[in-house]
Amino acid sequence: MNSAVFEVSKFARLAVTWVCIIFGAVWLACWLVGVFIPALITQAAASSTAGQYWAEICRALVPLVAVAVFIPINAMFMVLAERRALALFTVRKGPNRVGPDGLLQTAADAVKLLFKEDITPRGADALMFTLAPIIFFAPSIIAVIPLLAAVSGNHPLFGIANIPTGIFYVLAVSSIPVVGIVMGSWASNNKYSLVGGLRSAAQAISYEIPLVLAIVTVCLMAGTLDVVQIADMQKGPFWNWFLFGNGALAHVKDGPVAAVAAILLLLCCLLLFLIYITGACAEVNRIPFDLPEAESELVSGYNTEYSGIKFAIFFLAEFTNLFVVCTIAAVMFLGGGHSPFGSHVETGFINWLGAQLQSLPGSAQVLSPAWLVNSLVDPSTLSQAIWIILKVYTLVVFAILVRATLPRFRIDQLMDFGWKRLIPLALILLVAVTFLRELL
Image 1 (spheres, one colour):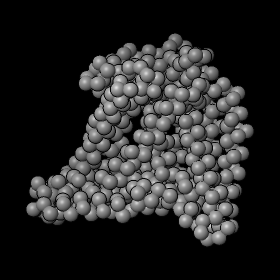
Image 2 (cartoon, rainbow, N blue to C red):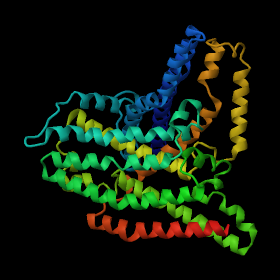
Image 3 (cartoon, rainbow, N blue to C red):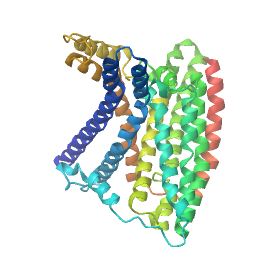
Image 4 (spheres, one colour):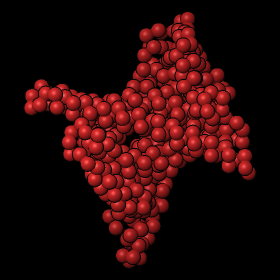
């Protein structure tokens, strides 16, 4: 028992350390590019038009800077967290040699991969073989950008990333990586890779349908495709989340018909969340849906022939995709960055911290120490960041637990489950939610 508690505490320390490093680095980079440098330019150029122009360019670059800093550091943490969590779930030791408690293990692995020889197989299509990991990885970066506004409470620095059809854009871009898998598997000139690519194409087609239907149903309930508005509609206690019918239980006292409709809507929303999580695991090739890279059958599937930096890009994209689908789930079903205990708790914390910062002497003077602290610590964004981190990484740990628990599907079971169960159920829930909302 003491050993288990010790291992859990080590994992918790590792997670807290890495999360602070990740989000501290991301916010510091965003603050430098979006606040500090524009302030310097504005002070130096006074009322010059050119100065204002360059300051606006810096602010427009903030979403790109956030993604560029966040993705590699976060992927390294997720690799380490998965290895340590799998060790914890299966009662064995995980990485614990490189750095304190194995803190630097994935950094060492990343350096090793970068210096490994990059090999192109004989008979492979060199151009497509090289482009495949890029096409697989690029959508992971692009898909994150509209979500920045939702997870930061529509912070002014990320306002440029907020588009009215945000979730449509994210889902459209997220469907591209399968093209990279198929391209890389075909260009490898390897039969195992080709089978893995074909499996990936079939799996993506099968499970993208119920996943999109689940998201469409939530958008139908919200009446918008804007991820910021969808997150804001779930403010308040956790029963306002779309996971629980967006406040459906508040209608239980409105009569027997409304009570039945509210309970059925709650059950429908819970099923929609399960459908989304299942489809998301299949889309990002997580166990038990990792048929495209089944080691016991296909050596390593579509990436069998890849090595060095190209393999590292595939690896990086897989964990980034997992983070993206968990972020979508948190925004669409779990209230985004809003507190599950009600807006009064969230507002109380924000007002208290804001008052403490405003009380610092000289906070109104640009580039003064108090101004630096005030601009660096945004109470609203800090509150939203804490909650979105907890929600997203809880889903990530759940995905790791599923990997440690469930065996891999057979290919026929995988296809049957998608076409014969998930898709019909998602269609039924879409119709049911439409009618139940009208009854309420």
